[in-house]
Image (cartoon, rainbow, N blue to C red; front, side):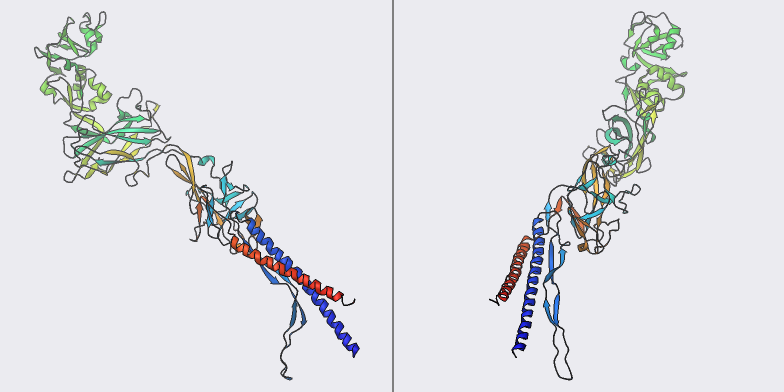
Length: 630
């Protein structure tokens, strides 16, 4: 009996020892797992201010079990019930360490245009030269090579380059974004190709009714980006609602005319519209040989010849302009009605008799031109063409030639000599310009040379002199009206098209890069001081089916794993799914919640403390066991 009792006691003692050993190891496992949890908490708190850091959390799981008795089912024969299995746990283990990778961190505004924050679940793609990594850290800068790179490690930010044919990002394999490439530092110049005239054409405007007309300055560029000013004028005609506009001059940026040497008329350099005839104009007046003879005490009828004729007729005459000079300095002579006797010599717009004495009391009343005698009244209707042109040129010297150049005969159609001033008055002429017409009933624009626009047509060079790399400029007048504005016209010239109000065809100078901006979809634009902008590339982002499966690599970097899904090498537009965007001038901070971390720290401390008590108590039990024998 004693022997059986002793055997049971010994068996129970073995069970006690085994139990104490299991509890010791369970306590050790608890200490280890809680220490691991404390490591995770400590790492979270350490990275509370790390850009783009994603907090982690640990999940525990029971380790394993020792089954001392298996479960048995109910016995229908004996009526005995089933018995559950007897299992003794052997501790705890770390089941998983999770990353709150989809939880956004707070936004920190920096004002740096290259600091970027991702809104959504995507990742920036960066490359160290051999391998792609992924990050939420958008703290970027431009390195010495012009590449967009991470400030922490210099890894290049990856994206899509601009297709030169379409001017849009080409969504193929990602590559480093070199935004400060030499080709991007400047924006090329372009010649002006379009312009428009706006405002009101008031027929009572004093400038429009003057000799010089209403002046407008059109500022434009050539293909090299040099600026010029085309001076265009609008003139009233005798017909109501009818005007003409002409090009008066073209000045460079220094205010100098671009007319080549020896070219008098700007129409030799550029042409605006077609040749039109303008009537009833007091358009110009010049002093002539006649203008200095103001007294009607003597009537002279004569015939004009060139200065060369003077030498052949009377080479001995003294020169009133200076002793010893030859008669060839006279501009012309006037013969008597017999056609052979010299009556007067003409020099410097004055008449001299055959002795060289100035005649100041005579008025030329008629001339013989090409065999026909013309009175002053008849000269008012005289047209400068045929023989009449050359003979009248001899009478009036170079007065018209100086005003209109060598083609004056094709410009001046008729003239008269003013009775009071003795000046030559142009009454009808042809201009290289455009006929501008308005509807007289409502003042609406009708046409200019039959359409809405005219072309300012440039020659490539004049007399071998390069004038500039101009493009023809189409000038639209349809935005103008003829209206009463108190006698003040508001006509003005503008670069660009009428529809876009200058956005197209206005031309530009060469532009230097003045700034860089990044849009919400990652497109990078450069702005230039000539008002232009240029797409430099687009930041591509990566998305993963299981972002939590990414593997941390340090330096705020992740790499793809089998459980995260592979990166396809192309990436995506962050706004393509309508849920993501990029914010510039801001960074995503850590998503660590300190209040939660401190709470977890407390529970971890208590858990660690409790597991240490398991070991302490188990050790006490073992000590009691060893004290059985005194």
